[in-house]
Image (cartoon, rainbow, N blue to C red; front, side):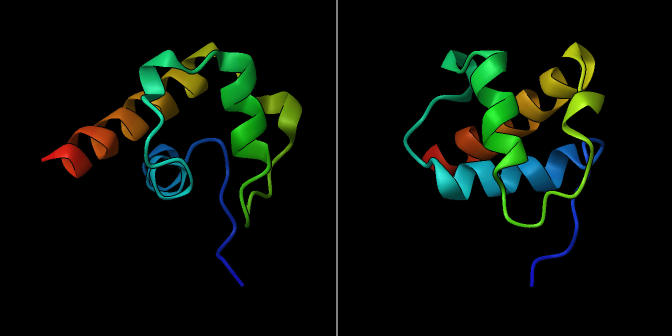
Length: 72
């Protein structure tokens, strides 16, 4: 079973989103969709209502770093 992840686990969420959506540029994802993707991740165990723009932005940037690294 995957370890529990919370909104503040931006790096771990970014890694998982990159694995799940390897061809999707994170900078093109709307925050409403990003919220949905995060809450549907295996191991997500936080209150969906506790997200905010700052947390979503941190997740998007962590995902973008993984996206760039994957492109080498």
